[in-house]
Length: 95
Image (cartoon, rainbow, N blue to C red; front, side):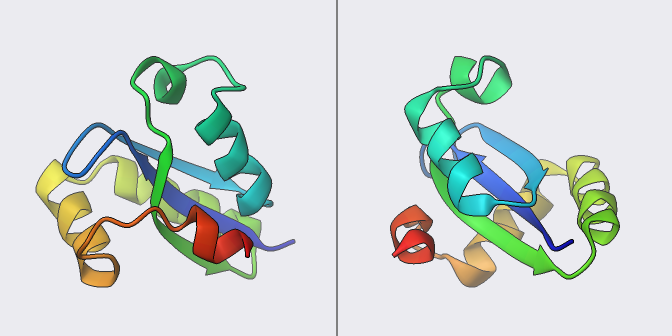
């Protein structure tokens, strides 16, 4: 089963949420619409700003755990390496 590691943000340089899923389109939609209670809903993390795809869900889970322990600066650098304008990638991923 494939998996995705992703980062949602409340705004540019705002609050970040790191997650893992097997269906990125569905999961990003749930974040955007506030359908699931928790951290991302409480802090308004509705923008998909970064993601990576893995062929093995276990690898995606391990990568998520690693990223969650990173310094905030490293996460910001990771996002800006592929998305310097902090565009919401949901529209491009799901179209």
